[in-house]
Image 1 (cartoon, helix red, strand yellow):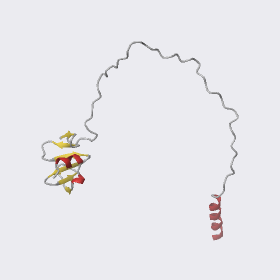
Image 2 (spheres, rainbow, N blue to C red):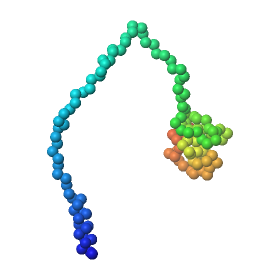
Image 3 (cartoon, rainbow, N blue to C red):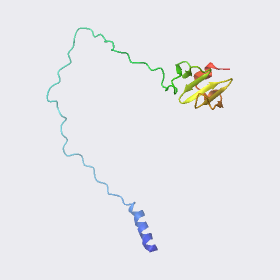
Image 4 (tube, rainbow, N blue to C red):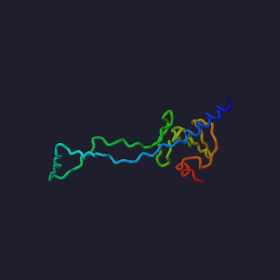
Length: 134
């Protein structure tokens, strides 16, 4: 029994070493000519009148930010800071699912009431760091 398993294992291992002989490459015997259009394409019409650009019907709405607003909609985007300023709260900001709070130092949390984790200026968006530079 042990001998059969050994022989079967050897066949499996050596079976992976079999190489197919290389087939000689033969160029295709017949290459069809490129297709020709059935009708000639007429030349583009030219006009001597100047082309004036037409204003678009409605200008595209310019999005103020690439970040989603805070839940509850109590934020106002401040482009100079790069964050939402939470209305009705002192020194509370929001960006990318994180709230930032200034209280003589930086804190961050996942909700507007905390819990707060202390951080340094490297843990807050750059605009906030500039605003509260010490």
